[in-house]
Image 1 (cartoon, rainbow, N blue to C red):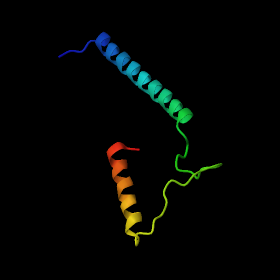
Image 2: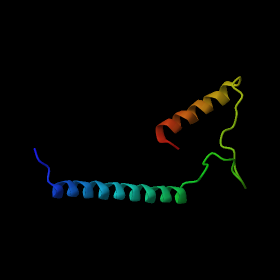
Image 3: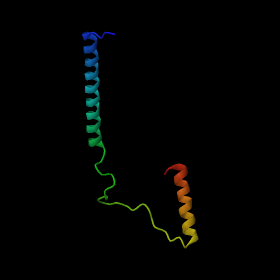
Image 4: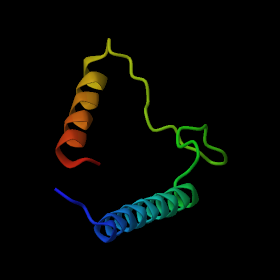
Length: 79
């Protein structure tokens, strides 16, 4: 089986073009991610931040039932 020089160069050119396009698209995606995504999404917020979770006293059944109902609503609707 003989491989011609021309066929080898076509394969090499395709491989080089594929690697170039892959690196270019990776670079573009990385730049866009750095621009639009925050560097540390879990940092402590500044300004007028509101605490979302209120710690409840589980010894009181009424508070616990309200907590469970709210948790079920969250699982059902996602809000």
